[in-house]
Length: 139
Image 1 (cartoon, helix red, strand yellow):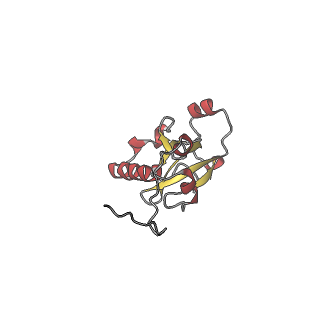
Image 2 (image 1 turned 135 degrees about the vertical axis):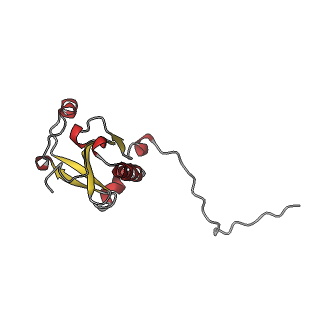
Image 3 (image 1 turned 60 degrees about the vertical axis):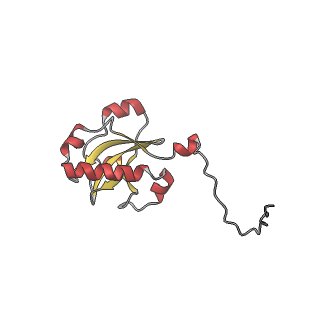
């Protein structure tokens, strides 16, 4: 005969893992290089800078947009860059698609203070500039 253990209420609760909903999934950034400026693209970066950029994108992509908003701008967070601070213009091909006026962009850091600058549209972050020489906008 087996003995039944009494429940004392002290058993640790085992959280049930739920599948993320479509909304929760879309709260994580997806990165696009579709509209990147020809003078600020991967070809302008050293192999080490490319490596550091990809490592930072992987790190950022594991965090929700809410977590990124709350993060420090020189860590995995971002800072707002006013459109008028840009030295080069936002690629016309993006403006033709978006059609809305863009007041500010976001800059994420990689490899120290180097940045990649782009625009968030829903959960997609369109990278326009990889600013490894600090020349894409007025700092």
